[in-house]
Amino acid sequence: MTQSRLLQHRADDGSRRVIIADDEGAHFLAGPATVIELAGEAIDRGISLLTAAESARSGEAVDLDAEFDAGRLLSAIDHSDPARMMLAGTGLTHMGSAEGRDLMHREMAESDNQTDSMKMFLEGVEGGKPANGATGQQPEWFYKGDGQGLVGPSDPLVSPAFARDGGEEPELAGIYLIGPDGTPWRLGVALANEFSDHVTERHNYLWLAHSKLRPAALGAELLLGDPPGDLRGTSRILRDGKVAWEKPFLTGEDNMSHHLANLEAHHFKYAQFRRPGDVHVHFFGTATLSFADHFTTRDGDVFEISAEGFALPLRNRLQLAEAEQWKVRTL
Image (tube, rainbow, N blue to C red; front, side, top):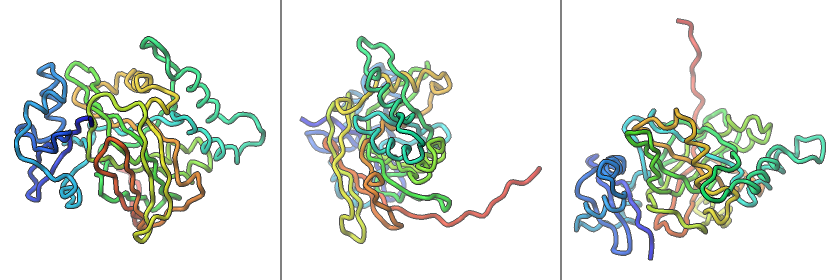
């Protein structure tokens, strides 16, 4: 039995609707036009997001593959005011995720002592999954930007002209809406490509913050309920229509050094992240990168990420931006 998913649809005339997909197929909802509207109703009524969606299910069926191919499926969440959406995440959260980072940073080290990355990873292994709801070890955290940087499941990922690399990061992202009283509500999880500049990061790990200020792609499907503990997928890069690089990836709490509750506790403990009406897209990390295999991406490459539990992939073309002409002026 598959878990229910919600999708956002935009017709050719610009009108929007929400889709529910499950074992009974995929159907449009009669009611709220966006996932945020539906989630707001669920919070107000004190019911689950799934119950709210089921109560609005119509009899109008949808062919998800056809709508995806036509470019009518949007990212699993968006916001009418992009400034009210935060893109952030945590790294070194997956078993094996420290290996590539450690090698990257050890190249700059002068000794065989543990790098800061390895120390942080091992601290997560030891204390990232506390029992009985306690808060455990604090993870690495990074900021990616606001909703301006979020792209849909088939839109280009644009790398700025000053970037030194544009590389994929296949992972899950938690989707959250802050309720009227400041309570963070997890709506579900979505497949994501947390696009980053690994060459910039490799120069010095203190440049991690710079390397993360890039767009990110979010899948069309919002997987409702608790995500699977063991989720397996495939990350590949297509070049000129052929597979140039491919590797399986693992995610879910069974494959992580932190559980989601710990990552959430350390993100939302900051009061400024609990502003009513805001949306948070939180990337949970990965252990699989083409960069770790010394693969160099090119303009026009297509990142394709798919995983169990999701009917549709992420398929985003790498696009290099032209240099921008601007300067700071004195007013």
